[in-house]
Image 1 (cartoon, helix red, strand yellow):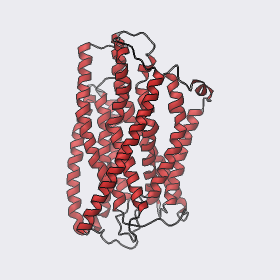
Image 2 (image 1 turned 60 degrees about the horizontal axis):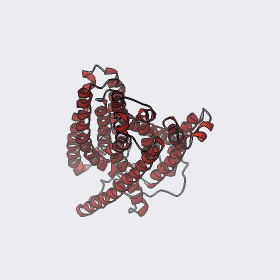
Image 3 (image 1 turned 180 degrees about the vertical axis):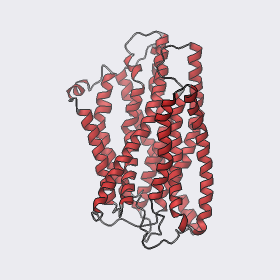
Image 4 (image 1 turned 30 degrees about the vertical axis):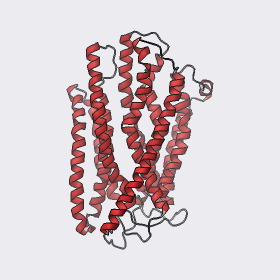
Length: 441
């Protein structure tokens, strides 16, 4: 993505993360930690605070979608919509990384904290533990999809609304280099998403099997959420992280097919390869969905599976098709172009790694496993809920930052490799009609 879209997304995320700190960190923790230091401050907040903050965040997304489109000099409604959507995608990922994952992880572990000062027997403790493991998976993974989707929609609406005045252009004229660098993240995200999915399958398939076997062996009673839902929500999110970028690239190829010339052969190769990637991911995802049919839970299938499938497949292709074909730019790439690319790659790729496996593992390790002595009646947990929550927040934040930095470094190296290959093969975009404008996404 272009630097102005990226900077707009970062600014919107900074405002929303700051605002959401109040309800998602300061107030939420009061419900599970009696000794929470912000207890008095939380009690002073009026009842409408949550609604007001959520409204502020929604308005921020809309406004910065507008800013992204006008600052990027979007020339029509398609460019305006894509500039706003790109801003929303980046902002949604950052919000999730820096405050959302903590909030949703805390929701999943809520019952463990509420039972911290209660006397419970082993059966009750095991039921609470298993529910926490399942609830954390559903909360962390599914809410990630909704948070990012909402951010994209609000940003896209803001960008689209800005198209009422296409002559409203902010700042100096944006640069017009070739577009291939700004599209590279979609291809790389499809490949890294596959790697993340492989790790998820290896970890969670064994984890869920062990968990179900333990439930049967110990004859645990009082479980409110069936453990088989863990794989469903984990695979659902992992499937989206692989297939969505693939569908966007398909939209690009479909849009530029007529002007591709001899490069159509590479299009066919990519489509066939991506069909294999999507098919492999879909195979494991469908396997997790089958459990819902066996359990007779068709409502869950209709509520979760079908909408995500439709939005991922058709929405991805539509977004890609809206983008204009890669243009042979009149300017060489500058530092700002590369900086925008590596920031976008770092945010999107880092979030992909973070949400895929790291976030859930950290929450479960620090809270669920850390409280096993109390839940099973075999020992005492030395850290209070407040100490555990503070530690969880700090470690999640550190790993989120690490994931983004890793994505930045990986994106920079990938960009250099692709640039070297393009120079060696003397790859240039196919000439386009004069009326085809640059792609601003």
